[in-house]
Length: 426
Image 1: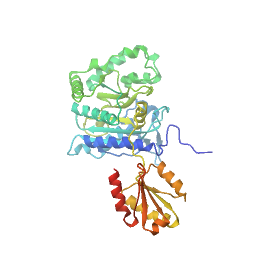
Image 2 (image 1 turned 120 degrees about the vertical axis):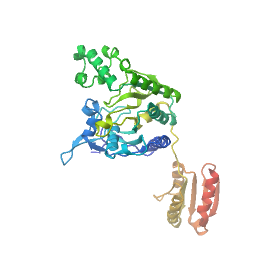
Image 3 (image 1 turned 135 degrees about the vertical axis):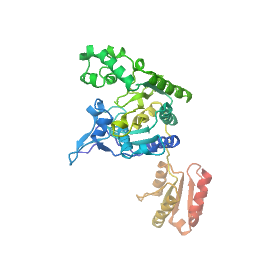
Image 4 (image 1 turned 60 degrees about the horizontal axis):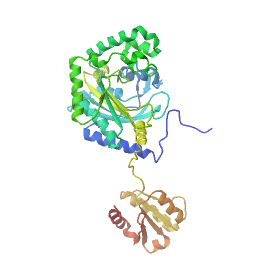
């Protein structure tokens, strides 16, 4: 019986992986410009990192985590998202004491959630995210959103929609919470079991329910914007002002609540408006999480961040028909004719690679015609052809595959000659 990969996972093969690398490079380069530094946390954490950080009323904690017990009886969980782990590291390593504040971090790597696989959604998926910890300035909310938008725009995506909302501070949320309980309580029996359990614990999460999203009470539920106190209103107004100043279009959606318990104040999502993208249009989500550092054992520290899926980014690029300018082809293919020439090309190939060129040769004893076909498939810019007779005469032919021009150069000065040819050709 042939072995197969687990459901909800994928192999990313050569030819496709270069697209991933391109997106990762764009994200890294932008983080350098915005001064976000990389952090790498473990693939698995103590389970309480996520039950505390993500929230025990979320679908992630209740239904989707890969949790196991190690040989020491400790409960561990494969990370389902990146924020809780980054905050745990921030607290454990006392980054709140760093001289440069806020601490601005980014991460990239696999996450794991046990959910129904569908187009663009996997049980193992790759997430890129940023966290800015230590500032309650609404300007950094705008900066984080601008960074997320810049990634997509740098990749060429145009059919984007940014929606934002305010979830308010603690006072505002408590007032809204009471209003939601009063609104849903009389008819809560008409809702799913998850909504019933959330009514008292976290009624805001009812608004994020997929099963009951078409229930008439959803459309008439009180908006958080009606319950924002003066401070929360001023904060949200500032965020909108800064986004406008940055030339970033947005829509305010009072129904945007996000799926994690730790969000407050600013919340946002970036969606694809591309035709045929699919039912799940969200590309990226994030928001402010003041209070999460304290929940994780640290001092009072405001924070904001976002996370995006590389898989969904690729799907959006495909929906808009965008081909990434990934590097293709090699600099030089070394072809040989004869046993002595073939042996000599081992050293020649290594010299090319040492000089910084991408290069390849034949390893299957193919005829010269087959070697040249291979060079063509590899999209070689140049082919260096060496035969036994040329080896004796201290000569080697170099062919420009684009123009078809071919010249002979001395073999003992091949590297110098090739470098000059290559620079001229560029």
